[in-house]
Length: 100
Image (tube, rainbow, N blue to C red):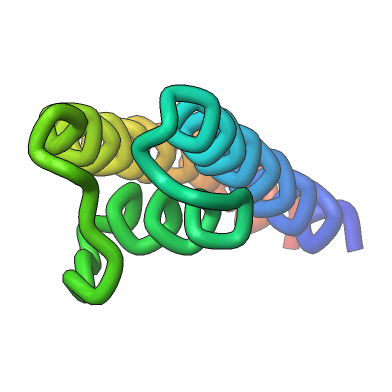
């Protein structure tokens, strides 16, 4: 049970941190006037941050660099999250295997 809580907590923390970053990108893009409303901002930020990039919502030319930066930011943060998750699992699982 302790392993489950540790892993679930780690996933929850990572998901929460990515969600906060997506909301920050959305709020900034709406505040700058690059997108018309918060729904569009969240949707655009989510598909851009995850590098999915459907292309159905695009930024005007003056703000396209922000879309690219959101994508780079997401890519780097997913890499860091993966490394963090591997580090947590490497600490938790060997201890669990030695206890059984």
